[in-house]
Structure formats: structure tokens, C-alpha cells
Amino acid sequence: MTRLVLCRHADPGSPDAPAGLAQILRQVPFAAVYTSPLERAVATAKAIAEGRNLAPALVDDLREIDLGAVDGLAFEEYPSELQEALLRSPGTAAFPRGESFADVRARVVPAVDAIVARHEGATVAVVAHAGPIRALLAHWLGIEGDGAFRIDQRCAAVNVVDWSDGIPFVRLVNGTSADVG
Image (cartoon, rainbow, N blue to C red; front, side, top):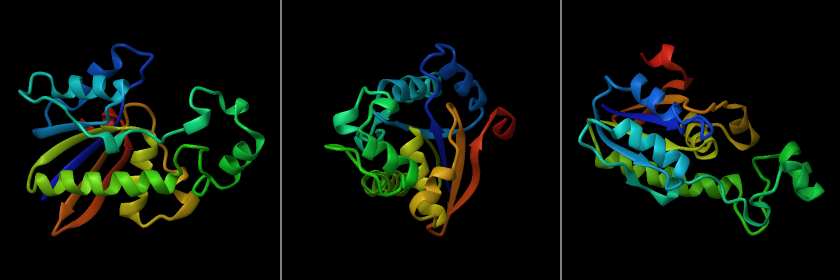
């Protein structure tokens, strides 16, 4: 059995949050730690890897959705058509000169499939963002369209997926320290 411990990065506004998540996961015997290249995920992955003789491996395809032309803007500053599309049908909305949720799903699923295949029979940690994690969980659970946006992912959430004979079994979603410890 291969186990994937899929974590959303810790709260970037709380400097102690990565260490808190690492403490929760201290007893988990990770064979490897993978992370999105974005700093908030890297900081979390480094905390998880610390003291384990592991260095987090950066995987570009684990990054958050590319917001394109609206990157850096508040939602209220997005064009009204984009705001409406994101509220009405987030599963099909696309950011101008950026990505859609389908684009995220198309890049993140093969990336994590490769990680799982590389570590057959082991436990690995993957640190990513809410969008990619929702895309992965929706894929494994067979949830299409806007349904993925009903999967909550708070900062430092832990999700556990086990593979048995190539079939993923989602064991935990949006877990807390009480669920993991």
C-alpha cells in the first residue's frame, strides 16, 4: 500500500504554523516530501522534512492556479464577467491569460500519479494549495464540475489517500491535528 499525505500549506501569516503542522506529522514515516515551488508551500514542506534527513523536492505542477491578468487583484477588482463566472460556475471559469480549474486538474493529476508510482509501498508527503488539492480529491472521488468547490481546504489541512492495487482510497479530507495525531 502506498500512502499519500496531502497537505495544504500552513497559514503564511503565522510564522509558527509550518512547525505546528510538522509537529502533528512527526510520527509519520515519510520516504519523501514534495512541494509546490511557491514559498508558502516550500516553508511548510521544509518544516515537515526537518529532522528526517529529507529535502523537499520542488514540483512545478503542484503550484496554485495561475490567475493570469488578475494576479494581485482583490476579487472585487476582477472584471464583473469573471466575478460572475467564478460565483456561478467556478468549475468552468477561466482566468484571462491564466488557467481554468480544468487546466489545474490536467497538470496536477499526472504529477501526483508520478509521485505515487515512484514510491510504491511507501508514505510520502505532498504540500500544495487549495485549488490543486481540490482538483486531486475531486478526480479520485469522481466529482465533476463545480462539485470540487464544495471540498473545504483550510490552511495546514491534512488529507490522506491510500493506494491499493492502483486504486486510490480517500481516508481523510481537510483533517486537523485531532484527526491525524
